[in-house]
Length: 134
Image (cartoon, rainbow, N blue to C red):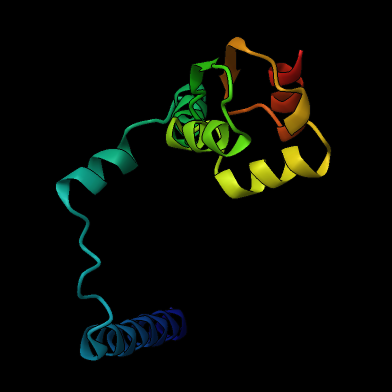
């Protein structure tokens, strides 16, 4: 019985000694500072997360590009540069010069029709050209 008691005391002493070494290292290095969560962080950790809500939050956080619609009135003697500038100001196209070059390079400038046209910012240069020439 004495042998078992001595073994148990030795094991207990070893556990206490090891725990003391770990505690001294942990608290002595300062690694524990700033690890206490704020009340808000603790609430987030404790509250169960609804998978559907998390998915909806992720989708909502993705910035969906807004679609801009503009009605342009093309008048007699209106140049391609004037049309491109107006479309650029209304955020339909990014660069007026690029769109003007596209229209000139493909001879769309000669085919622009007079009238009222509805255009959006998600239209390609080709789609815009087709809209303005038909």
